[in-house]
Length: 419
Image (cartoon, rainbow, N blue to C red; front, side):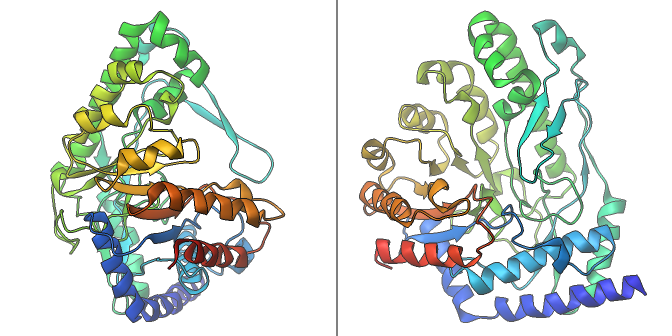
């Protein structure tokens, strides 16, 4: 009885999903994203990330009882609500994407994450590599695709709505390991210093550049080989499809473009995909040190892929010149609030996608600072000028329970940019 109700609920959401996918505006947006990421943008594109906003969908709204169905229901409800309410350039495709389940084995030095007891996303790590000697405990990880679990989950979705909303299988969600989380499917994330921070701690990592340079190179070599092994396992096991639709080619970044194969469910190789390359943890070191220690390993991974999205929250003004010389397939550059906006626009020009991350503080918390939000948008307009511009609004976790403020911000952005 419970299962029947779960499937009935998912089917009802699938009907809403398909209704949205069939709207003419979806084709217009798809064309807009494709043109932008092919460096012939027709207009700035806007996308708000709602997946991590507190209570964007509350637990009280969820009806499914089975954990997998419940997480799928939450994802579908977020997508539908986003498409109906926000007014940005979200694309709802006429199919439902799910990724393969892949086991993440231990590094041999397990890092414990301690979450805050209060509601939110705050957490700290219990770092396990204290000295270079601890690196001896690291093990070579081998990756395994859990096809049995994958097919079991797909069968549930096919039974619920496969005849109404086709289910497409491909890629893997690196950020969310729980079955039923689909926000990041398609995202080939490097995360080299991201993992080093977890091993060592950011403060201690800074000392390693001076005190243990050879060991730091060895650790980056270990992580690079580990990531290559994971990506190549996905390729060898024929789990990859082009992430050139509304999958994540980068952080909250659609992959639509003309320069890679279109996503049609066909198996592909790494060289047909976007990948996300970043090193936020390197922000505090010099560009020269970044170029010596970190960039060569990022560039090695980047060569495996078709196109690269670079960056997240880190400033790029002092190192973009190094990055573009090392990563020849660079296509999009993240521009966070930490950049020098008088410089970054000239550096990016029309060579790359100017992927602006609006400043979250004015829109966060109990009260909105609309004046500051508009100032941030005007800064973007002045800096980007006629660039291939997109606004990807991320890291917005608390909107004071006011979902309507998202649409108000989108309208403000459109007015400010003259859309």
